[in-house]
Length: 83
Image (tube, rainbow, N blue to C red; front, side, top):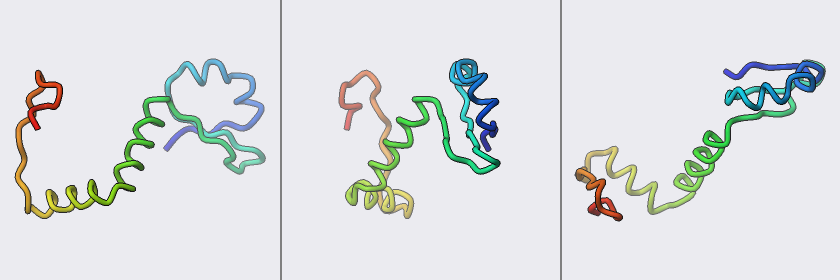
């Protein structure tokens, strides 16, 4: 769970909070109003949402989870990972 700061605390320490690379919440009158997270976390969240929105990807993930498909080793030296 991210740390929560009130508006005054966040305003006074925003540069340090941003440089910390950690998630945090800013609250106004004890009510959360803003969530801040590192760019890498945001990009991972967007990528996850893209996968969840792709019916073909979800079908493949479900098949793999159910053991209906096999796994292949990836070739990390190949641009297409050997797929």
